[in-house]
Image (cartoon, rainbow, N blue to C red; front, side):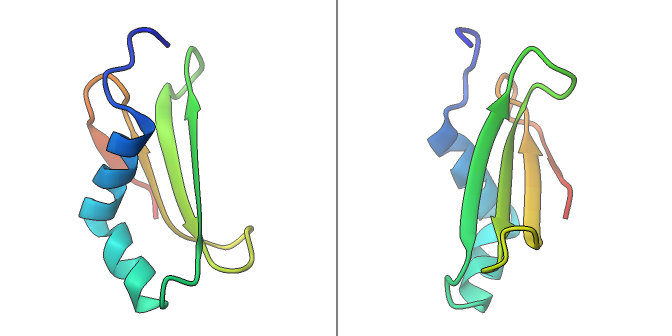
Length: 75
């Protein structure tokens, strides 16, 4: 965890700048945002998931490397 260079706030801003803000606004900000980090495991990244009122329904998901800020839009 001490090696993390990009905070939760940084990861959220990356998500917003890469499409999440538009999707969120398109649905009137009526969504949930879940941000988690996995370190020391298989993925080692921030997971940002935006979902509708049904938490099981993701409308946008992005994984962000906490060391390099490289990202992959999953959905």
